[in-house]
Length: 96
Image (tube, rainbow, N blue to C red):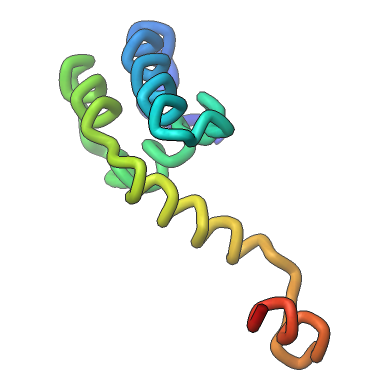
């Protein structure tokens, strides 16, 4: 899935690396650059026609909070989960 800002990714690479280092320092080292980039696409840059400067994109990256990223990641994981409340085992797993 292409995005309006993909062509700027190499320009904002230092900001992405900085944010991932911050996540790692906070104990969230398992976040990949692609996961962070996907979050930015789907949450910060969801208005397709919005034209941002590189400085605004960097600000969006650096202002990303761990909590908002993980809330997004949790919802995405839940959307992708194959489970049904009709399945008793799945319901037991959820209620653990």
